[in-house]
Structures are given as C-alpha cells and as structure tokens.
Length: 132
Image 1 (spheres, rainbow, N blue to C red):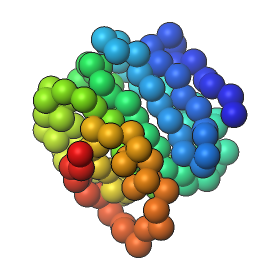
Image 2: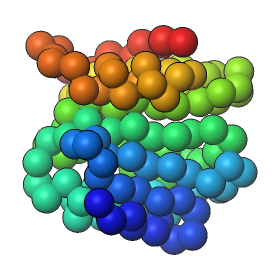
Image 3: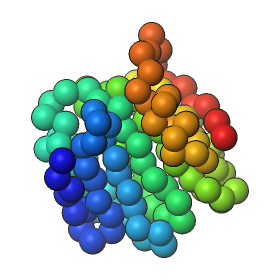
Image 4: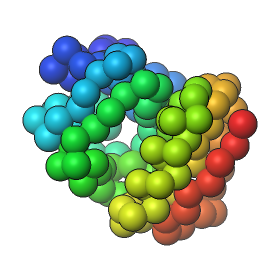
C-alpha cells in the first residue's frame, strides 16, 4: 500500500481494494490538482474498476476542477465523505449534474461508506444517495 501525493493538496492510496482520496481540510482544488488526482486513479487502480472513497471535508473546487471526474472504466462506485452541512450541500448540488456511469453516495460515517463500497453490487448507472 503506497500513498501518492496529489500536489500537496491531499493523498491517494489503494487500501483493501478501495481507492482512498483524502483532501487536506481547507484545500482549494484547481484543475491541475484535479487532473493529478485522475492520474493517481489510473496509476493505483492498474486499469481495474475499483470503489473509491473521497474525503471532501472542508474542501473547495474551482469550476473547472468540478468538471474533471473519474471515468466509469476506472471507478465502480464512489462514496463522498463529509461532516458539515456545507459538505453535504456541495455534494448534493453539484454531483447530479455530472454524468458518472457509477453510483455515488454521500456519507458522514467512514465506516458506513466503506461498508457500502465493499458490498456486492447489482447497481448500474448514476445515482446520488445520502447516508448518515
């Protein structure tokens, strides 16, 4: 298990079959940082479709960075982890606008997010759900 630095704004690692992206609290994610995260997905995922946890707590994204999103050929499902009402609003407001091809859910509990990411899935297409 090795961690990849994402331009000093966060880290990504593959752990237990799940890609985990942890942005630093207060980080501003621009287009270059978002593209570096996509490269890390390809590097760590080795071309396989894997579930992904993204810690979005206290992070802001540029408009251009919000349009950079993993392709469904590399991510099978995504859990967004937040803790504040602002995190939840950001997730619920922006993500339905993106065509993903994989289910996405927002969680306030990392344990519940990991359980959902690792459960067998018959889901397809895009969905945005919310779980505590």
